[in-house]
Amino acid sequence: MAEVKTTREVVMNRAAIAAVFVALIVMLTPIYWIASTAFKPRSLATTVPPTVFFEPTLTPFAKLFVRRSQMREPVDQETYDAAPWWEQLIYDDGESVVRNRRSGEITPSGYWDRYKNSLIVSIISTFLAVSMGTLTAYGFSRFKVKGENDWLFFILSTRMLPPVVVAIPMFLMYRTVGLHDTHLGLIILYTAFNLSFSVWIMKGFIDEIPREYEEAALVDGYTRLQAFWKIVLPEALTGIAATAVFCFIIAWNEYAFALMMTNRNAQTAPPYIPSQVGSGLPDWSVIAAGAFLFLLPVAIFTFLLRNHLLRGMSFGAIRK
Image (cartoon, rainbow, N blue to C red; front, side, top):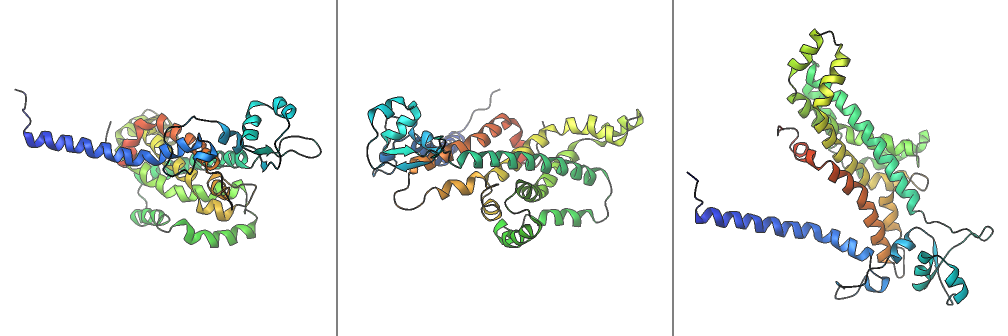
């Protein structure tokens, strides 16, 4: 016989749905605001009250990737007609593209280089952190380690200090050994920073995998490494995917280390985007366009691995 819900249960369910809906609106509002501002003309980016309905434009994205200067006089019609469509958008906004005086080539902005640096550092550091974290977690899960709890606490304690606390000592050490403003320096730093997170999450997942699977493989003649590669690793793929998502997000969004440990060559996008505010009248639509493009990789990566995130957030406590 079907269970009939009471009036109280119905009210509580509807209240819960309403609370989730309100929370969703609150969390999505900043994302909507960044996305909408990225497609606004500069004149509408800071209007009071805010402009909600407008004609979208790609001018902020066109201006994002090139160096520009304010035009003193309007460009002549012949030059305007010969320019590509994206450069015409910049002309329409009262600015012109900065070109090399000798070659006449367009001078790119620093955004694309910083964007590539973020991809390089985040992908490599995530791969290293997840790989080493999985091997370390397997060792703690399958072997008797003297002082295991102390070692695990020590690994976790590396995340107890905020990055800004250790940034200055790390800066001095990096400058001494020549790792300042290098991709390798940031990769090492992000890998070490994410390693404890990776170890603790992966240990929870590997603890769920029955030891009998490996014991059966060892009886069949597999080596320990073969059993790990062919038995444990496929079973732990869900945990690896979830751990990779979190490590990538942390490395992608990291600001303090990227600000203090880099200057130009290896600088990532987070410290570069706010540096474009400058003084005078900042172009908030261009800044929003940079932030919007910066959100895309981590949003796509998270969406592709969304099915693994619930178990990752519960540290492997929820079984399939």
